[in-house]
Image (cartoon, rainbow, N blue to C red; front, side):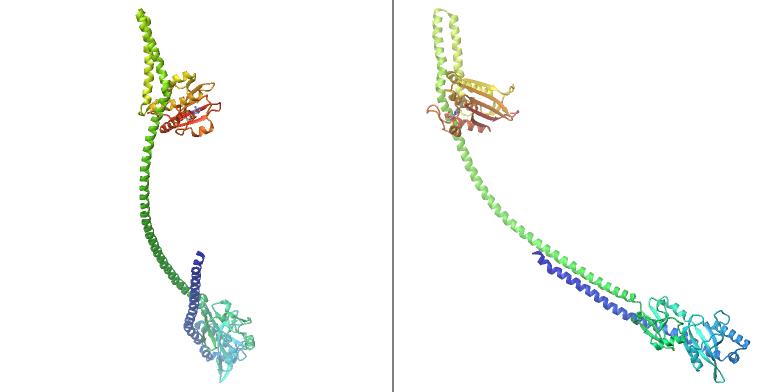
Length: 593
Ligand code: ADP
């Protein structure tokens, strides 16, 4: 069950994946925490550098209004503000000092808070004539102390830091000198920072920041008292002060100046995220390389295991092969022995069969000789009787002196003896044991066989026809033993002759044909044909329906074995028109034979 085998492994991978994911997540958490803490610490350090700078800028002009308050023409102007010349002098002086000290504005107010002289006396938005009696710095200075304040100018709408000092005459406060300082430069310096930097007042209202959206917002919820105070002093003109909840983010804080201000730095959150991401990436890389290394080790081990397994399997297979080879070799050897034994037996059997066949052939021939004896005797007797008669007559003719008649008779004697010689020659050839292989013309062989039975045919009044169905001048040639082929033909012709002996029509027809690479000799007769049980046993040795002395039942058996030995076939059947028909089928001799 492969599914069951794979399941734990898949779980292991899943577990490893979850473990790595939580590890990476954990690293991210810790790294983010640490990055935040580090950034906060850095922010604190940064504030430590920034705060003194800001404080020194605020402090730098602390004494300026104080010093101006001691100028004689200031007291002179305050003494009678309706006189133009002293006011003009103060105006010029304040302008000169303002330009030299690079502050926003310097101006002089009477006890009611009305501005009677100012450095910007000649500008469209001059403070001259305006009353700042409602501003806290004025009231503080009037009370005899220094007044400090940050707010949006009611005339210029520009924010600034105000420092005010009383002007005394004979111990009494007769007016107030105020200096307005712009803090815009700080704001501009912070612009480049990625972190959010704010300067907030005592009430936690942001009035300087490098993030425009943070300005004039409160970092804490404002109390009603504070709200009323802001409205009365017009500190931030009439701007609505909304609560800023971004300020909940961790940040560094430092007290600055004399007004309870707070300089705050909010480290850019993306910086912490970036730091944490870097750490996480490093951790992930370490983890990944660990995994890759583990995987490589695992793969290597597996490959080694596979190699080992393959080697052992190969060795086992080789061993098994060896064993099987030995086993098979033994079996083969045994089979070989058995085959050899069988072959030897077969050889013996074949030898026995061959000698049996030879004997059979010989026996068949002898039997046929016996059968032919009567015919042959008759054949030889006739010419012999004729020779005797011709000889007797020749003697008589010679005695009468009829030489011509005598010589005619002697010629007849010669003919008759020649015929006898031919018969004897045929018989000699027939009695011979099997001869050598030769090229045989089947038509010629058939004619020679018919010749031997000629007298028999004539005696029984039977007709023998031999025809070549091919109508070709080239003879049908086969390779074989001439004597044996004639033996086959004589057998078949004799059987046909026997069959027609008692038939009303006594005809035996021999046809020569070619069928592909075979020569076919067909011997058909007009006899009674063969009953079914005879047809089934035709080629069995010693099967005969003929009376003893006439047939041995060997003819067809021998003929068939002769034809088979020549790679041919002998078949017998009944003809549809009546009578039997035997067919000898022999392979044609090759052209080069
Ligand atoms: P035998 O001629 O000595 O009997 P054969 O082997 O030549 O032996 O023939 C076996 C038998 O086959 C014959 O006895 C005969 O019954 C049958 N036979 C052979 N040729 C013919 C034929 N042309 N017509 C009818 N029967 C035949």
